[in-house]
Amino acid sequence: MNDNSQASSFVELTANPAPLGLLGFGMTTVLLNLHNAGLIELSSMILSMGIFMGGLAQVIAGIQEWKKNNTFGATAFTAYGMFWLSLVALILLPNTSMGANLKTSSSGMGWYLLLWGIFTFFMFIATLKLNSLLQIIFLTLTILFFLLAAGDFTGNEAIKKIAGFEGIFCGLSAIYGTMAHVINEVYGKNVLPTGSK
Image 1: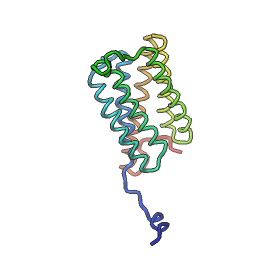
Image 2 (image 1 turned 30 degrees about the vertical axis):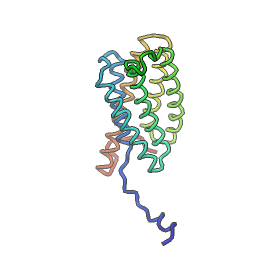
Image 3 (image 1 turned 30 degrees about the horizontal axis):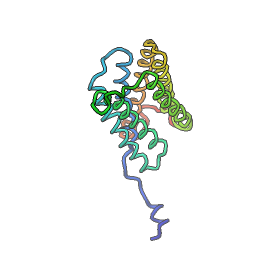
Image 4 (image 1 turned 90 degrees about the vertical axis):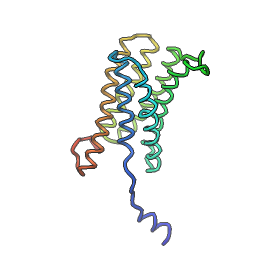
């Protein structure tokens, strides 16, 4: 059997990693933005979710998307997984001997969030060729990053609070995406719509 016939008879047997990535992103985004909205305190619960679900779970999903030849999924999940890991590091490093004098200023955090917002805006443009649920997730995430950056640049707590409520919606959209993927696959039909093209 030659290589071409082997390639044509290949059957994909691996699971879809997107639900795990969306869940890691969604749950962590909701929790952090409950804090941004002023509803809960920043705690080790949020930071732990940032490391393990927001960070590790998304990076694993991104690597699995790479293996499935999905450039969008691999880029999104791996990048946002690293966002969560770097965000936790920004919060925790100044509390260690290694980073005692390295606390990030408000303007520094503003630039950090602005760059993530620009990246997310370009990822949103890519979703215009995908389904409407991803468009909602990436549009609201773009807005979230720009609002958070504006809040840090200006020091305006009202902007951060608005960002928090907007971020809760963004995170819930991603959690819905997880449930839609899993339930639709299990039932073999579109029980929960995603606006697929």
